[in-house]
Length: 243
Image (cartoon, rainbow, N blue to C red; front, side, top):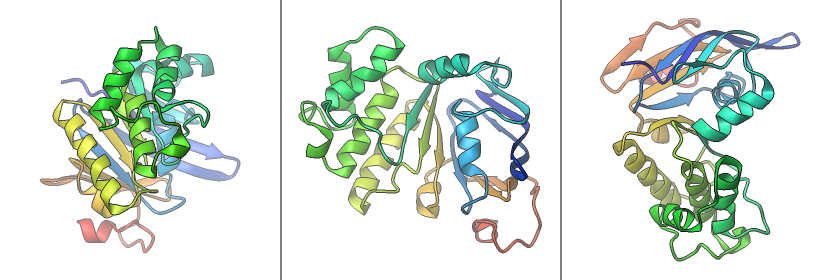
């Protein structure tokens, strides 16, 4: 089976700072991968490269067989719009648009607007009766579910979530994780960037970064990759507890 995401020797340098250092990761279709690591570990940089929001300094990235590292910014925007569903911690909803209209914005930039399909997407995340509400009329958990519906409306090949439960209470965190479990059960490929070990443990696989390198990569059934970082690293994002 061909991997949906292939990352080979990717590095990213900002001035004198090496945010990523020769990272290699392959993700098969249908896998739920959690990316963890302390602040400064490189996980946000890796997420931005996977999400076509940034390009690597060196190395290769392929999504569903298409090489991304040679594409222009406009081409990356098209890939992000058509193949990736982005779920943000801060929601990024348009304040003067209703929940329905926020979802339909994603349709507008992808293809034709379909109100019935957008209402159905909101229904899938439990907001079928809230589609006329503005973001300020919705709770944080409801806003995050609008964000998920918006991410799903164009049937992306990859769902990429940045701290999707970071601003939520325990009840709404559970609702969002239930939605992700449902999507995973339907065969969606999901990558979640998170600080939370509890959230990460819902995934099939946990990748831990430290100082821009992979320090641990394990599936639920055990260790699957060698560390690239130091064996004894006090800032390794909890790798000792997981191995």
